[in-house]
Structures are given as structure tokens and as C-alpha cells.
Image (cartoon, rainbow, N blue to C red):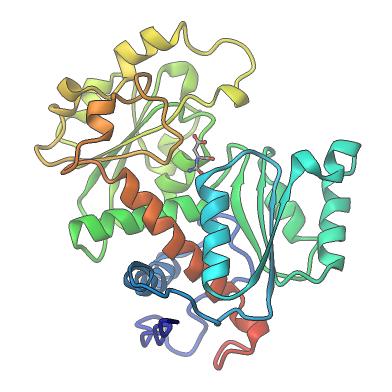
Amino acid sequence: MTAQAPTPAPSRFPAGRLAFPHRDLTAIARLERHEILFLLDEARQWVDWNRRAGRHSELLAGLTIINAFFENSTRTLLSFEIAGKRLGADVVNMHAAQSSVKKGETLIDTAITLNAMRADAIVIRHGSSGATQLIADKVDCPVLNAGDGSHEHPTQALLDALALLEALGREDLTGLAVTICGDVLHSRVARSNLLCLQALGATVRLCAPPALMPAGVEAMGAQVFHDFGAALAGADVVMMLRLQQERMSGQFIPSAREYHQLYGLTRQRLALAAPDALVMHPGPMNRGVEIDSEVADLLDRSIITRQVEMGVAVRMACLDVLTRTRRGVEGWA
Ligand code: NCD
């Protein structure tokens, strides 16, 4: 049986102009607080719907969505694919390893090729910061950033925010202290989360060894720590990040064992945070390096699988909202 798609909730956002006036979703940095809240509200409708049987809608029937992934992915690619299919779109995945990129085609030529196939939305993951915007500037359809280098990963930040709001039963994150620890330097997740969490009212503490902390994050409003214990003191949420070896040229840490000793989230360390502090990780996890299994699997504290679940709802909302203009949805056309 096909479940009926939820009717869009009446928007509580700016009267007289589009609640989401952007064609693309390339960076949280380009969004205003009310636009983030709008996408999260839209995503919330799909959370319950996704838990029901027969979760198939024809909302995007007849549209073609291309997932162009130039970097490996499990969660992001799968959830974009599931999101598009649940909404009835034709979803095509392009893996760079099997594409003409390996034959020397430039990113721009690939973009022009995808555009010529008249995609209705293109989802891109690429190893270079700014690649998504470069493609967005060359094509005629909405472009969604599924992670570009160490720049941004906007849908990850949105799903992390939704997972937190749902877990805490809150409307925003005012007054919450969130500690993000790991390879902040190479992490697009950290950057997007810093912007998104702050926009929703949280205080963000970034913690990393000096070599893995980018310059200038204080100017973006972050509190910077190199001592994990100090960063954890009284934190309401602890988000752990993987060491992004694939983006490191040279040696950034002495060894995984020493890294774990200083920056691994163990049960003892978690006790330094607030008593009910929630544990998050965008995945993929390196158990025993940045996070211990007994912490990652804590049933009452870890919301790691909830993050994955929210990912599908958030991506459904983004695909829906960004294709409204071309679908001629009333008020958006
Ligand atoms: C992250 C990414 O690709 O940026 N993963 C994800 O999308 N869930 C984080 C990572 O790779 O460490």
C-alpha cells in the first residue's frame, strides 16, 4: 500500500517572500536561521512518514536526480538515493571511479554533460572545496552539496541538528554546549555544524590537537580547545570526528594509539560532560581511535543511528523544496 504523503504544514516563516529562496544548497554559510528552521520543519514531516509501512510518494514523479559522487560514501549516497526514490523520482548514481573522470575529463566538462541530460537536481560529492559551487554555476538545475573537500556538508549539519532537536524534544538549541572533537582541520562536517548549531542558538567548542585545528575559527564564533577534558566539562553534546587520513599530506598525529589516549572518547572521559550528555558521530567511525565501542553503542546516550535515520528525512525535504519551482508548486513557480 502506498502511504499518503504528508500535506505541507503551513509555514511559520516570512510572509510575502519565499521561505527558501535559493536554487541550490551548497553551504550552511549561505543560509539564514529561518531558512535552516524551514528545512528542518519540512524534514520533520518525513520522519514519521518514513517510519510507516508503504512509505512511497509520487511527489517527484517524472523528475531525474543524478547523484554524482567523486568520493566514497555509504550513508550520504544511500540516503540521497533512498530519499529520491521514496519521493518517486528517477535516481541515477554516477560513481567517479567508473566515469570518464578517470579518463581525464574536467569537472566542468562533467557538469556540462550532466546538464545536457536535463537532470532536475544534481547531488554532488567532491574532494575539492568549492567544487559544488563551481558545478552549480555551470548547470541549469538545483545542485545539492553532499560534501566538498574540507569545506561544507550542509545536509549532514541539518540532519545532525534534526537528530538533536528530536532527541531533546526542542524547537531550537538555545543554551546548549556542543563539543566537536577530532580532525577539525579537514572536516566539512565540523564547519557546517559550527555554522548550523550556532545559528540555532548553541555554543560550539571545537577540540583538536594544534596541528588539526584550522586557523581563524574563533572569528567564526567557536571556542577553541586542545585539552579534551576541558572541552568536555559540562558539555550537553559530544560530537566525535574521524581522522581524515585521505586529506592529510604528511604526518599530523604521532600514532592512532597516542591520539586515542589524548582525544578518544572513553566512558571515563564522557563522565566529564553533563550527566545526560548525548554522543554523536557522522560516521564512518573508527572504533577504538576517536571513540570507544562502549560509548558509541550506549543505548540511552548515543544518537548515532538516529543521525542516520534523520538523514533520509532531511534529504527528502531538501529534494522536495529545491525542486518546487520547476515542479510548478503553487507559491513557488
Ligand atoms: C562525513 C563526510 O564524508 O564528510 N561522513 C558522512 O558524510 N557521514 C565524515 C567523514 O567522512 O569522516
